[in-house]
Image 1 (spheres, rainbow, N blue to C red):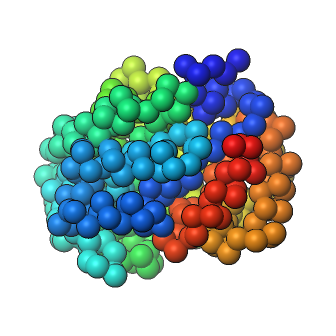
Image 2: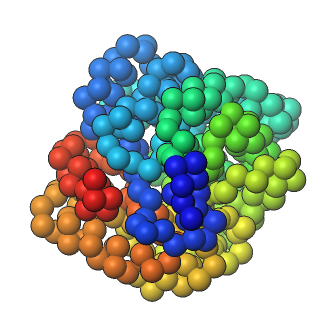
Image 3: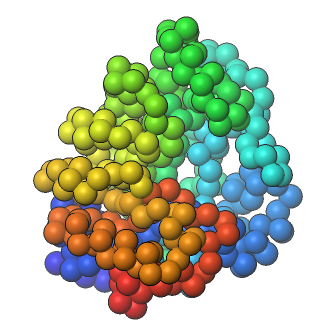
Length: 342
């Protein structure tokens, strides 16, 4: 039975069906909120903003004050790990992330086991948020998954990804070594987050789309399984949600093989896929962020459809990707009212 001391999100990730699904949104802290835009303007650049515990904690808490979300997700970025491994990372206004030359595997391997220490500011953010958050609302930590982070590191920030996939074929050994370094760094980083107060951990595999089955096995399934094993070997019992975005039918294999407690589904996930996965673990998703932005009767009809098709099993209501910056706040309020009744 869910109590104020047991967040609804944790109960569902344990396999329990809730009276209503817990709800939170990817990128629920961000540019669609005027208070976030005002706060962001006080920092000189995005990376320093992420690594300022006071500002990052405030950004994390802003949507929790405004909306009845059941969980907060720490404000950070998936490209903090490359920074911890010695690669230069910065954000160009209007262009997104940029990365410098890829450091040597040897130099990154030397730093991988210290990723949590290097990014301890994120831990301080989590500690601050957990102290301010009501007991009945969960706190989520996260990391970019190794393949997605590797694509940025190899492409130096490009979102094309064809170069990274070509690299996976032409330089298989080098990529496997980079993935292994990223697994080590991710375990250390997430373990630190769990110690700092994260009650759920999420792996964002944003670029799982387009991988062949052998590449998906090598670059997504094996690294994700290794990260969960690594956390458990450290005594971290925190539940993990995996998000292999764009993986299509391969998500079913992912759910069966990777020992995560929840599987996040993207906007293309059919009802039957979610229901199949729910036989063994919780699912999360999969409202289209474009529909959230568009609003209207179609939005509420889709919310009802998702609730009907998946609420019979352990289900977390969320988007299939992050909130778009120009999403009207009224549309978020309408969805949350529909899901929570509040």
